[in-house]
Image (cartoon, rainbow, N blue to C red):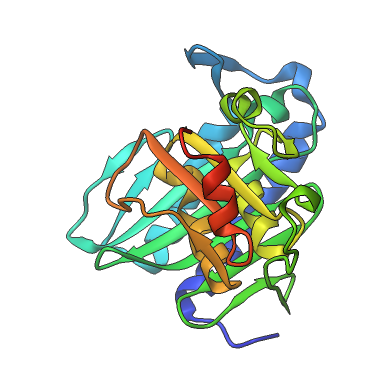
Length: 246
């Protein structure tokens, strides 16, 4: 296994702990308590419980660090220079419909820079992670973005807005974090989505960058309504040309 920081080790252990809850509840979906947060936006008892445990585990190791989370919001502790960014289940709609495509996403932002990122798909047992200036990895194996040069041979991840907008070859998976993880691993050649939240993408941004990919300019201090485009460097300019008005 490659050398990892104490912070990333904490993140991995926390993910492994909560993944057991997610796998168990995924097998009993019809019994889950579900609430509606907004149009097409749902939260389950599992989301809330997983987030609570992640906060507990990360706080136990780093008591003073602050948090930005999907369900709880902002938790300000004495250290505001170091912030955990958590999405307990990115892809809740997939989870609710028995579709095995969702992930836990955790990132650590230190002094306004994302320094560690982890995306874990508990059903497939696939873990993607990265640290600043230390590369990106999939289940302990180094990963790189796609080497394709011809944009008509490329596959992109997007959301419903993107499907309506472009003629590029796209897939709408329902999990922005896994889309970015897949770009980092070369499974997807790029990803573009609008109206995202920072917890959807914080870990994925670092994974793509450390895998040699390119990310559109975004304000990482912004929490919501984020527009993001990511791809390999080979096709980035051509992808951006196709998305000029997106």
